[in-house]
Length: 419
Image 1 (cartoon, rainbow, N blue to C red):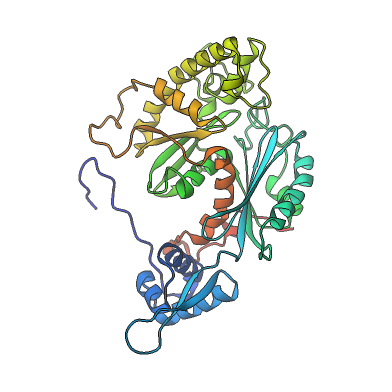
Image 2: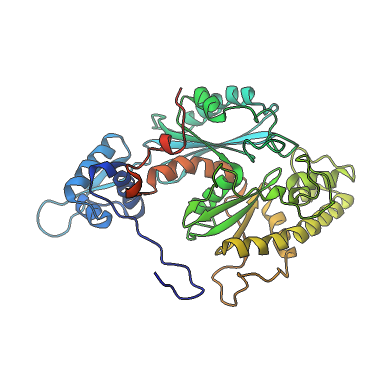
C-alpha cells in the first residue's frame, strides 16, 4: 500500500476471524471492541468485530461467565425487545504490576478498563532474588485488601527490572542493576512465589507500554521512550506493540559507547552512555561535592554546591543524549521520543531544554504534530504501570497469523511457568 511521503501508514483495524481455531483471537477482538466502544449489544459487537452474531453470542456469554464482561441494562431504541448492553467489568479480574529496583519495590493493580485501583511503593533493603520473592506475596496481599468488592483474581502479574537479561559481564553487574539475578530463572521464581501467571520484562520496555496505554503515547503507534532508571534504557513501540528483540534486550542504549576512552563502566567498556546520562551518574556527580543522594534527589533541598553539580550533570547528560536522539530517529523514524522515569518532571524538562539545537535527522521536518522530544505523563509509576499493562495487553490486543496456526495463550507466548 502506498502512502503519501512523510505521512505514517494508515492504522489497521483488527477484525475477528470465524474459524474455531481462532477463538483466542476472537475473544481479544470482542474484549477490545467493548473496551473501546462499550457499552454495546451483541449485534453491534458483531458488526464492529466482523464476526457472526452466533460467534459473538457464544464469546460474550463466555466472557460474562468469567466476570470479564457485565450486563449494564438494555438500550431502548425502536421496536422490539431492547438489546442487552455489555461493558468491561471494573470489578472483574485485574492485573498487577511490579517494578523491582535496587532500593524500592513499586506495585500497582489495574482493572480491565485500565484504571489504577491501588498503588504502593515500599523501601527495599535487600534486592536479591530470594528476598524479593519472599516480599512480593505480602505486597500483593496488602494491595488486594485496599480494593473493596473485589474477589482478588489476577489475570497475571507483570514484573519489570533493569536489563539486559542473560548477558555475561552486563547482567547484574554494577550499581544500575540488581545483584544476584544473573543466574536465576526469574519467571519460575516469581511464579512459585505468587502462584500467578507471570510476565517478565525489562523496565524500559514496560515503561514504554505504560506510556502507550496511559500517558503520552496513547494516540501514537510508533514512538521511543528513553527511560531514566538507575541506569538508562530505551523502550520501543512499533505499530502499537513493544519491540523486544530476539532475546528481550532491544533498546539497551545505556551501554552504547558515546565517549571512547571515557569513564570506565562495570560492563568492561569505557564511555558508556549511562555513565553520563542516568540517575546513577547524577548521584556520582553529587557525591563529588559531598552530597549523598542514594535515597532520592530533591533539587530544592540541595545547597549551592549541589545545585551547581546538578546543573553540570544536566549539561553533560544533554550533550551526550542529543546525538543519541538523532541517531535513534534515523534508525526508527518515530513520531516522537518520550523522556521519563525516576527523575522529576522539572529535571526531565531541564534536560529536554538543554538538548537544543538537536542534530539534523529524518525527524527534522518543518511540519510536525509533536516536538521531536517530549516528557512522559505517567511519572514515577511508569514502569510498574507498564508491568501491569503487559497481561492487559495480552488480554485485549488482537493478534492473528493464520499461517502460523492457532493464536498462543499468554502463557505460551511468554513461556510462562506455572507452579
